[in-house]
Length: 140
Image (tube, rainbow, N blue to C red; front, side, top):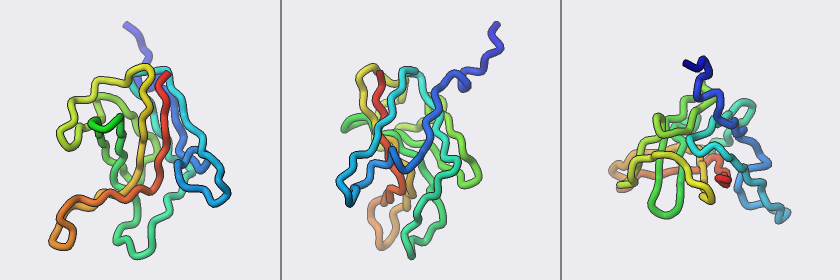
C-alpha cells in the first residue's frame, strides 16, 4: 500500500494577475495554465487579493466554478480562511443539470472562476454570479 496522498500528486495552480483573464487596457493577453493530470489539480489563492466591488454587500468570494464547454458547470465552496483547494471529482458539485464530474479529458479547455454567487430574491429573480477572478486551463 502506498503512503502517497493522492492530493499531493496534483499540480498546483496559483491564482495571480498574470493568468487573470480580464480585459487589459494595454491589449496584453493573459497567460493560460496547462495540466497533464486528468484527475484534478490544486488551486492556491495564497497572496492574491480579490478586489470586491464597492457596495457589493459581501466581503469575499464564496464559490469556485469550473466551466467545461457549454453544458458542464461545476462548483465548490470558497472559504475566506482557506488558501488551497482540491479541484477533483470528490469536491466538485454539478450545477444546473450538468452530469457528474468524472475528471478532465485530454484536449479540454476549461475556465476556473472565483467569485460571489448571490441567491435569487425579490429584486433578483435568478442567482447572480459576480466574477472576481477567472483563468483558463488547458488539459494536455
